[in-house]
Length: 240
Image (cartoon, rainbow, N blue to C red; front, side, top):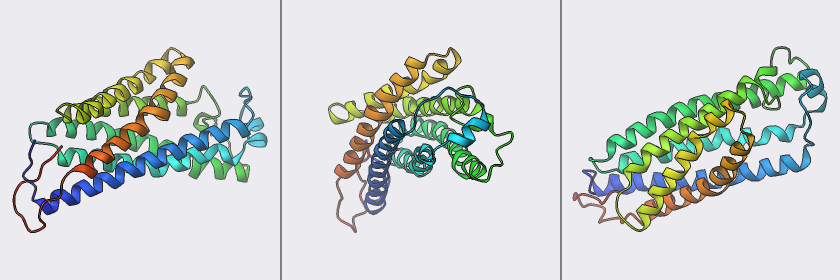
């Protein structure tokens, strides 16, 4: 595909795409590692209400959400860069994917901020009344339902965005990784609705731990490989 971007603009957009994809991969890995550490350090227990939780919570349980607040913007910039660099015949898929990705970001950023910016200070101050439905420690909370719904929105975004990538070889790998991540995350809404915990854990391992970081790294490499033409050239630049 070819775009109408000048070589200078095209290279700049590719560079933004490279750094955002790389940042998302690194932050996602950091989030997964922090979650693994939390699981080791925080003893799993049955939910017994906010009063008990307020006495037993650990600050480290909020670290993954704090990292998530930073990783989500990196993802959106990556998706925006893919859309900008897409050929005209595929740009509609990118715009549709970006719209669903933005909805995911708005919802999950709000949930993560509530955890880090509202719930954690409330627990520290002992003023947690009425916040039980926003605690991720409560497996039946509204927060968990909205969390699953948000990740399903990302699934739709990735599935739509997959069709931006055309061609064989490297592009085919990226396209089908987007499809895999998309379908896996869409299934989370059904996992929550029908209380299929095994499906949630399966998606978390397959997509969040393995496939999504690999996808982000491949997208970064794709942007890294977009050739830079002569800086003062006004010719078209090759797009994804």
